Length: 399
RNA sequence: GGUGAGAUAGUCAAGUGGCCAACGACGGCAGACUGUAAAUCUGCUCCCUAUGGGUUCAGAGGUUCGACUCCUCUUCUCACCA
Image 1 (cartoon, rainbow, N blue to C red):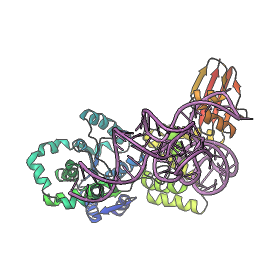
Image 2 (image 1 turned 90 degrees about the vertical axis):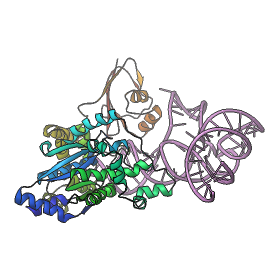
Image 3 (image 1 turned 30 degrees about the vertical axis):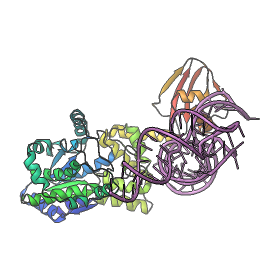
Image 4 (image 1 turned 30 degrees about the horizontal axis):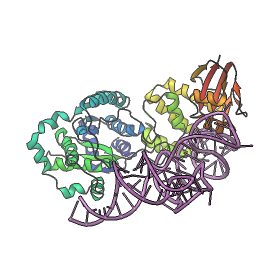
């Protein structure tokens, strides 16, 4: 039992510091029923979660399954400083109102994965505000500047003459102090958080709270391109709030290699089940597409519902496998005869008439499933289904 | 504060008087192939009903028949020194 728990906890992790301690925690849970705490900090800056964020949430859910109470820490105090991690410039500071708004949407999304009854939401403003100048000084005296500058992003910024605000030095300290206050047994975070996570361990020792948290780091999830990390700004993300059809299509569009990575980090299947799937694909008894579909359905089900997941699959098959027209497509209407290129622009499926002409020339444009060859074509009154490439559809009614 | 270098399309990056709507790479879109993809091959990638026209190379002026390329100023970035 403990062995299995450890295996699932280790799954997909990039690095674990003090795995023995995790094992001990599990032992005391299974033998004496003693719960333990897993801390994970969330920065209330990004209200739109994507699957990259859920990797951590799912690891927390795994811990819950094996007896942990999750301390869902909202960094409302630290957000006013701005986490310098991975940033090459000083970050702008959030307003109180923004933070409150972000937290609300954050937690509703998070509880699609986490067990609410085993989660405690804590705000570090509650204790950090009370720390006061004395406490702050005491905290700051635990660390030297040289040690601080060891941090990769700080040393790079320092070396390249990019400004570092002194308050940014305090961020790791405060995050570490959270662990002192909460007496956390384990803290998890992304690999980019290593310095901050270890700070918690160190401070727990300095403040002599009789325990040192284990640290588990999760890798950064690759985006749809399979290379760069999933992020909104790179537009390679699958949003937790994406519509079922989009979500399904996006998962299905990843490469076969990347699929295993997603299985490891995002699926709730056990490692043995995943190995079985892998073997099946390797010996040809399972089709990779089927395996990928199963993953898509699992993910859509998690964030929407099983029904919607199967509908999304049906819809996808209809459009792509049988190349039929999707069920829901945007409709437009226009009052007079219109030139095809202009019509495509009007329907928002082409950015400009120039682009529309090029696509017509290449045979990418279809009307009612028929390829358009004449770029001068005029659409007289009637109803048309316009299509550009495989994905973009619009219904147009000409009066 | 001083000195030097630079600012070119989504990004990187060529071009140093006409051959420039601007090489190339990446990204993106499309076509073929497929399993939906990935890989591969091909085409396209400023706008405009177009064998033509318009607006672009940080901004404002100037030189010239002609400027992304030369000159002046402005703004901003970067490097080195203090």
